[in-house]
Length: 398
Image (cartoon, rainbow, N blue to C red; front, side, top):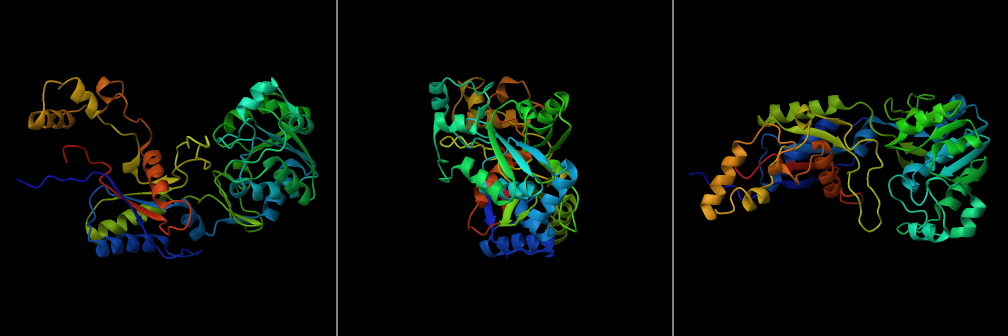
């Protein structure tokens, strides 16, 4: 009888060389993963997942643009006069350089911030203070003066930045006039200007629909700014400036362009070298929420912009504790193990709505695995932009 496998899912950060524009990323990733397997004494298996962080994909593609490129695109699309910039997230890394470019392409910016927090949970003002002030965030539009009178000069819990002042100064330094208002209804901006860039990420389609229905003249989502090259710059046809990160004080690294060919190339190289059929994905932010700061991690438009076909769909799992406590409550030991194993082997192809799957996580595989990879690779100095996940598709019977 074969030895029982004692380990389930394992996630490993894989060290790689620093990636530069034009590098053969498929070759580097394949060599790094197989080199790690060799040096650490583990072997590749069918259905292992190789995940590559989006930043090295974009870097190898050379997918950057400058504030001047953004300014030109904004000016051409919105006319260069007064532009409403609504629902941006509060982030030096994610939005500040984009805002600088937008401001350089307009004479005046009316910046409309959502409150008490931005879309991904960065807090502008404590919700209890809003209650105390008798303000209704669903309907009330606050001027900067009213906001300061009620709530003062608060700073972000983690970064120590007063984003209201920071964004205001940034716009002025870029040469534009600035007016700041606080509102959560998209059409509030139309009292100030009919030309709008809506910067929300996951609610952008609804926001645009509401603005156009309410009489806006020009509305562009952040996904429609830099969605084509400007003066030979990088771009992202699908997501524009969404998913971009600060590269320097005057440039941003855009979200990777089409990279399905990359994941298929790596899958083929590993198959050719090892005979194993692995899955491959590119991942950005994980999709999880910090219970202390209330920040939802997902500032990218999607967790995974490209993945092989074996990662389509959601898990189809039984809840072992449900089986143990209900169907097999009278069994124990080897008898219980055999009954649960038999249930897993015989489970339906689709368990949606079945009590025995209640409490399992019906999220996209790429969102779950991407979140695991984001936590494994970290956001700092670990130097592991590639993650190998083994045993993710195992179950109790393997």
